[in-house]
Image (cartoon, rainbow, N blue to C red; front, side, top):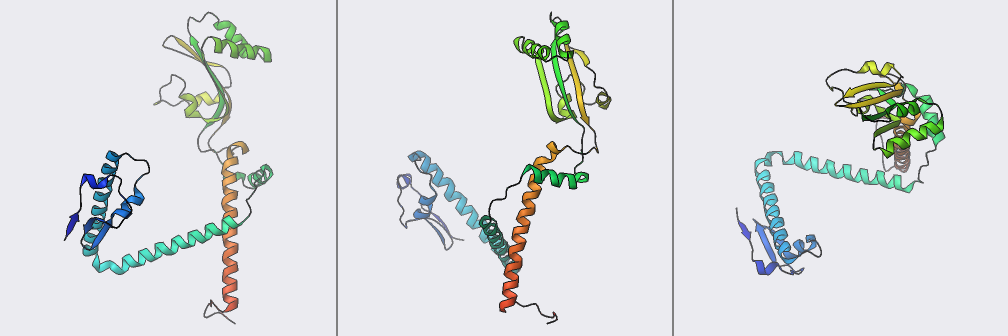
Length: 278
């Protein structure tokens, strides 16, 4: 097998788009013009030499592998041709489907559309792992405002709640609020608990709970719980439903165009289904 590489550092600096041959494998050639098209703009001379060398070596290897494959698998040439044709056909079908979709007006999905779908398919949306809403805060065991902090935390007055948050901020205390649903495992990852142990019992309490670890008090309260098998709230299912409605719309658009072109082809005689009753 003949292999030729034309090389010379001086020849690569500022190369032009001409037809000078730069490499050959058998009867397949690589020209400088092909290499120039792929060269990044603004690249330094030294970098262009490295880039060119790497590209040529890759090109040579690809040509050699292709030739080797053609020899080894010549008996299955028909299968390869069939696969290439199937890929070409699939690519063209995908492009025409995309053309159909792009020619349609943009689909506007409203909150009402999402709620309607959710209410009709609630059984499809189930919790697969425990989810919680809650709060966690921590302080050093010698923190002198601990009692006051706990009093404000447990108070139902809005101003006390604000005082609690402000005191945590001023003293750089760990304070995490989970007002959106998070997995129970993610919630527990903020507490000094053994990951190898089960903590499902914590899901049954809505009271303030405490852990003392490494001279630090960790306080946490789980406010709401969704257990495995519970119906997923609309707020959690919303984006999933939006994608379902988008995919349904896309399928409808493509199916409508498929029916149109098939009916037109059959009506005009361009296509025919044999064996059907006339």
